[in-house]
Length: 278
Image (tube, rainbow, N blue to C red; front, side, top):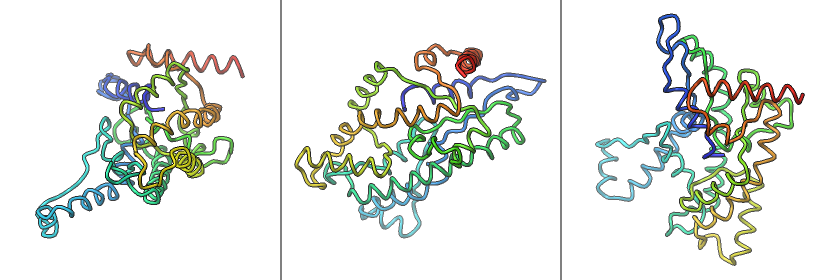
């Protein structure tokens, strides 16, 4: 899940420059961010069009857009994915920043397809990183929702096959204490999440029934808070199924990693632990 250390590790490895054979970077790490790839390659037009749709409501901006006098685009970075989150949105009362539930479902479906496509790009980027830039190490910083778009119980799942055939899958497993902290952090600042369609429908119906409200009067942030703890529980067995394709480390172990050497040691320990239990 977001907040357990995926991007921390990726940034740390990417920013560590090693020199091997006189070539700077040859021993470093190529950082492939799935969320960045989603936002810049597969959902970029959706995001930009949403900005333009809002801008068209302002007379001055409408005139400038209609005459090609201004250019509107998102500025997604590895550490700022706000344009993507803003586009995914939250269902509920439009006066409180919500969007219609049907539109929310449509954007969720777009995100699912984009995430699958971004994951299937990994083998090609592994090759590009090595052949073009000379990187011998590659880290794929996945989205927390990866477990929602794969079927790890299916040995023929195309995304799982593509990943496991090119990378070592590593699950960062959080404890109950981490779960509580993630929930507290989310409660302070709710953000859009991806839900499997069947789980989302069940969650939405449960919330409407519990609150006795219509879809258009729901507080969007309140709904996200309601769903987050349930989402943590829902995803846990899906992550565990994915972990059987690779190895597991704990969030406590990740917190101790301060350098690429620490990272290597953590992975080596996890591999040995896995082999001893095989």
